[in-house]
Length: 234
Image (cartoon, rainbow, N blue to C red; front, side, top):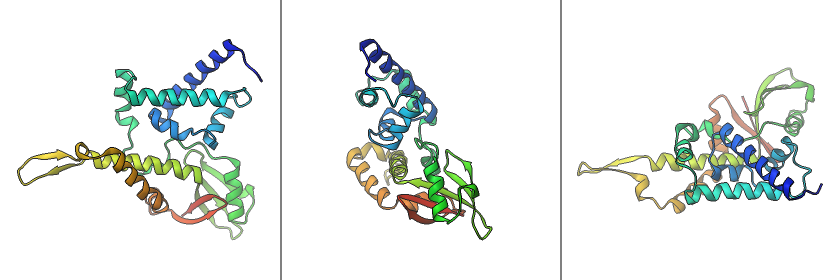
């Protein structure tokens, strides 16, 4: 449906409000949010659908504009001092590797349940959702075994990899090193941030299955990649 100038302004206002709510709920920076809601991604489409905006003409452009504006504000330091303090608070930082599995990841959907059913050769009635946000399911297979399953899409793993890269970079940057002189230094003060982040991204993406397994803990083992989904089971 087409929109006039007044409606356009109202949609910009609404998207800005929704983005504020999203940042507050997920405790993420605008730069992270831009990754999570990448244009053309499932998360981007789900965001619009969930808020009843997917049929609005040019709404994709509006959302993209707002995300870009917020990202630029963060980069240029235009955000308010209060916002800066908020983004630097513990809430907005990853404290553990496991936390990287949940930031910016949308709830599970029926396609995941169908994938699990196909993988375990069972029916949807044998699958129960344990935690939709953490992608955890219970599966009763034909042998009568009751298993717990965690499932991520390829897009989810890309987001998780970015989260883990941030976590590792911050961990390295905040480390201190002692010298024989008795002086100590913060490692981050000597890093080329772009080069370091690029190297970390390469390593994380190359080892994402192992890192997710580590984050999930010893109770879950990687089982299979199946139809562009990745499945762990206990």
